[in-house]
Length: 98
Image (cartoon, rainbow, N blue to C red):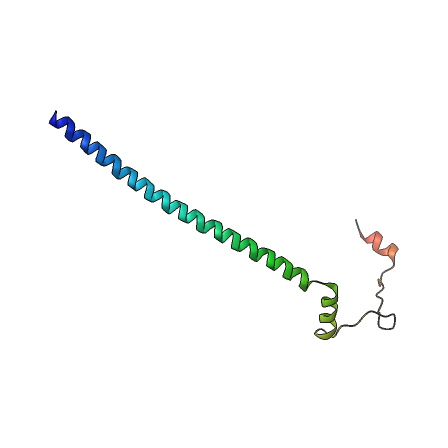
């Protein structure tokens, strides 16, 4: 009877230690999951903010203002337009192609 009691006591202690270890690992995993979800929310918020900023940077008025001021560009007029013509006639270039 004494051996059976000792074996059962050892099994109960082993079971209790396994339970404590499992609960500890569960808490660690829950904490890690909570951190990952918080990081995902932060990244989603940053992504939305960057999308808004991208749309604000790409407005036609802003692009035109930057083109005029920083790149010194101007609108196209017939006076400054240069037309390029093909030096070979259309028939000769069509014959050259296989």
